[in-house]
Image (tube, rainbow, N blue to C red):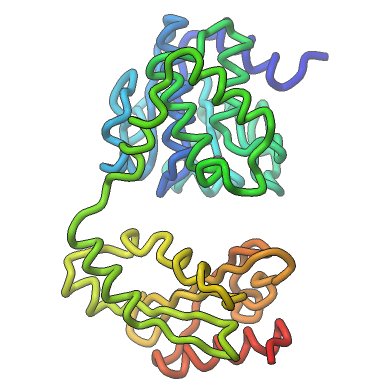
Length: 322
Ligand SMILES: [Mn+2]
């Protein structure tokens, strides 16, 4: 029996019309793998449409794509749709879910618990990114990992591994990157394009948010808050708060970093980060939220001062911080 990789490579070489899709609110892996598959299909001479329900985020516009990334589905669905980085069918967005029956789905993913919602399913939870899976697909199809294809693969792998710092980083993905580097990938330039995307408004927001830092439970919990007022004052959006929490996590004594963001009056979204054995998923679960051991979140409905108290108290109790 062929492996899922071989089966998918066969479909790509024998079929002619494809839709390529990835999850809404796309990150670097969702965009990088989407574009990388596009480059593979283009050099195989196939007809294809690139689709993401949220469209192409402006911060990735520098990426060379083999066609526009559309935010609407075609009137007629092609017989095959390659879906990437979606841990569940819902991640494809409502429009795509509604039309799943009109196409064969090739599900390429690396999330734990992917239910295998495709006609073909290739799910490998040890892969650090879908981008590294697409690189294997390219090799199977004898496509050289150079030029814009290599840049798209690199975007996916570098961002999903936190620039090769997370525990998910594998020897294979370092060897893949080394091979692309040897074949001419300009890593330094791409890294600058990935990182150098900030607006002055965003930096002003960060300044305001960092100024709200509170330290609780004998320096073991660090918390910052973002209000709707701050977004209005600085002309920013919730997406601009992405990764502020990692600054709080860097505090020497802090075991749990938290950010509370106003979503509606008396409604706060929270994110928690920890390291090693400290489990913040258990804290999020108390409020009906979810996530992983070291990264979790949820929503608290209460006025800000009360929401903060509830969260700190719950962290203290759940993790036995004294
Ligand atoms: Mn991913």
